[in-house]
Length: 371
Length: 84
Image 1 (tube, each protein chain N blue to C red):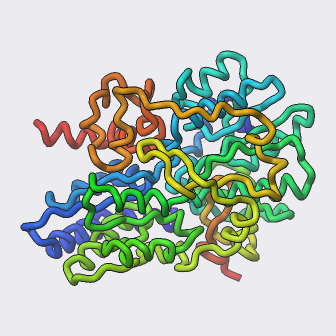
Image 2: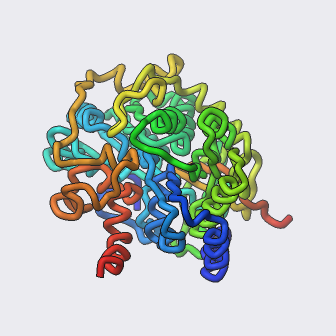
Image 3: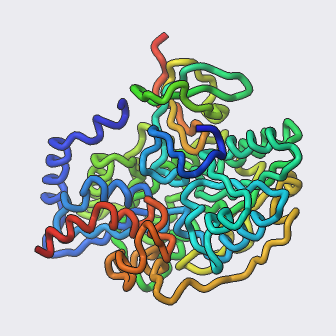
């Protein structure tokens, strides 16, 4: 496939890998965080970390939107889904994320009308087809996904589809990055920036990382060569004593982002004063809710939601995994009590979650290492 | 697969990627414009005819043959303009 195959060339990968090895300082340990869950998935799937020198460590970040949803929000979704007139729609991974009393899938088994959709447009279509029901879309995702919800709400408003509501859990990427950079738990040397979030917001919002914290960040694509080249660009910055925002993914990401998407976001959403992130706690102005102009579509206005904070199960260490403090296999329940089939924590549910990605691909490489 | 049908009915076109994450930025070719800011799109070489409906309002004027980057039913970037 065009724009995919050429970025999986193994020979070129080996060349870039050798360049990285030649650039790094052998006496130094480097910690590079890949912010996005999509990057985590690609790194494990293609074994990108195996092509890096042993002193270059990739640390997984908080950029999996399913993983960062706290249990209380799942319970809010289930409470709405249990209303008999409601058809509750969401992306597939969200169905299996446990709340305090089970998952949306459990609620479906108990009679709630819960349906998986591939886009909010699908949910809007269900609303048109079922005018006597109320269709609620459980919106999750970073700035990459929020435009899709925004455009769908614009359509619903324009066509007067009053039985379409949104339970909004969209989050923004900059506040959790700032929270991580302020955290004493983690000392990072640089960041692999989220390529598709940057397609929407541009590379400019990441300038605070070099400016305020003196760390390089390279906005990266998702193919293995993209990731290798991004590591190489970070290593070059470090070797040359530079720190700046660089755009490895220029074939897709304009530095200023997609202005039409940003306009749609600012029209449909406004910032919440605070939002709870799994593992990171409450972060100010880190999530979106519907703006006053779209209040009639807000499920939280129409339905009472419990809005109760629920602590993660004691055994679950998703919080530490999301902050990059521990690796997936260092969690006490990884691969035993917690597997993709029976997940305790969110990081094992979504394929983008570090635990699921590692469980699916990475553990085999580790088994080889151990043997 | 129709929208909202049984969640176990996963179509062959769907990779193991998570749709909510940025990984799901797929290069899709515009097959036909459907009006109202929508277009029917299909991955090059995909057997999943007739493709899926994508909102193309965010990428300006597009035409059949153009390649767009699609995430959650929305084209976020224009990757390639079709030869005239």
